[in-house]
Image 1 (tube, rainbow, N blue to C red):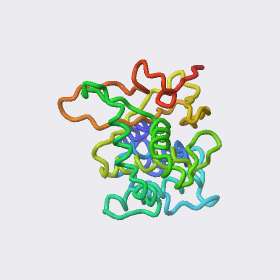
Image 2 (cartoon, rainbow, N blue to C red):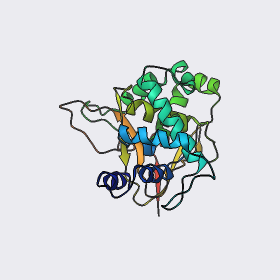
Image 3 (cartoon, rainbow, N blue to C red):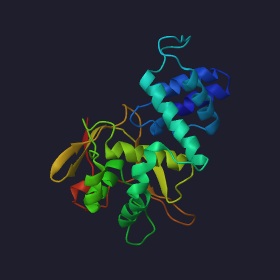
Image 4 (tube, one colour):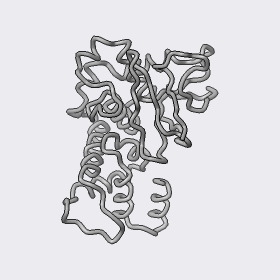
Length: 246
């Protein structure tokens, strides 16, 4: 959908304001990187300008509805943080990222799921990463005071925090060992995980939107594999999502 909007803009079928408004309308305020990480930098610059002049209840549009204030604020904050990272600065939301060595630990988690031969890399959802983080570094997880994630956990959840930081850092090219891929959402109603013998129902993206998964970045000469939720035959439920098909 995003690609089609960008294509329409490049062909002159819609204006830049129309394009950015349509893209912002697709944003989940808890995880704006799902949409924004796919957009070219030139479009992100236009979007930032739009969000800075946005006035709730005072702007009019010739094309459908305007995005909500929450969507606009989420886009603005994400893009401003992205620019700060690119310029070598640190944002106020990065404290936990550095204090708890999240990048290094996420890399170690992904490495631990590598195939024995080392040629293929398995992909994990943000829930699988967060659960492994909570299990392996339990004292730090308890110290940071964030809920793990899932329905009702709120926007301070570790899953949301990690997803936002990863999407911005990958887009800013500040992470060179992790890449984001997408799992097709066909026939997926929900994803259910288990942590401490309790089920965690994932908050999934809007209907039809792909589910992000993360893996070690593939290097030249490596044979890739399609995103996969866990090693075959591994019955550890915290390492495998249970899909409930419609």
